[in-house]
Image 1 (cartoon, rainbow, N blue to C red):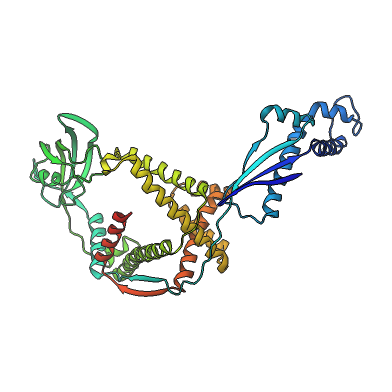
Image 2 (image 1 turned 180 degrees about the vertical axis):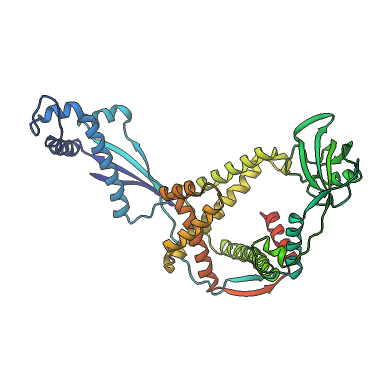
Length: 454
């Protein structure tokens, strides 16, 4: 086997590999000889099948295996002899095309092919002692705890139909309604409903809708006018004026509900205080995730500015294509275009290419830091994370569990974020971290600003 490097440009390398026909023929004969004692062919006793007959029947398929094994061996040799760290799968191109390959499979010609590959960049990590990061700390406000419990109470609150021939709906009542939405006098998709329950004042419908239902009696029909918000999720409806023909089927008044230990027991708690403690913990956990996201985002921003090194083009392209594909799917689902975002496809491609480059750069950096620091994700940690993932698919737990167990790549998608979070903690442990206490409102504003920046 002859291996010659033909080019080296940045992270890209190209090699030419030549396997002489005599070497391939020798490997073919060795394979045929090995088959003689194993193959069973009608008309021949075991071990007595002539090599020429085996070659005639299976020669090309055997040579295919020989060639594949030779290619794999060449790739291993290239990587090991040159001490390379690959950024992706090598690309192979046969020299001479189909005509030359026919000669190869007949053991009449040399196998010649080129191997093009990209390597991972090398860079110095250095120290993180001078990296400054702001760590956000936020407590769970007692007002949030009480509001959450009140929402739970509202969801559990009993409703009783108002008495009388034509009871009138009041704010706080639950009504059952039929409605047909129209824009420009034409019905639009998703604008029709029958027997839909609505608590007036819950603000769960389009702004202005619920207020116009207040005062309607059971069996009464009214056409109400509203305007969809400019930021409405379905772009085709955003900002549009619409009318709804609404018919009230029933009107029910809210009943009394005491928020006490008996109320807490309906949700599986022994006492109201135990319920408050659990709610407080859930809110603290959610706020903690938001604070962690802010801290991590600021750290990654600092690292992105700190490190600059050449990126494997293949990894960037792969990352960009994934981002771009998701973007187009989201646009299609929302009925939006680049014009709706006040941009063009060309500008959007440039921006998302930069995002892809940032992700690849930070991904390579964190992987290198984790490897040098000996960061490990234990199997039990992956199992616990997988259990959490499975729980998010009620009724499909077994199928989801088996899917991940049978697909190492999918399981790797569970392990990767665990590894990343450990590396982030490792860096924070060395960085110059200052804590800043903020309110929930300030944290929400930070998250909104982060979305705007992205």
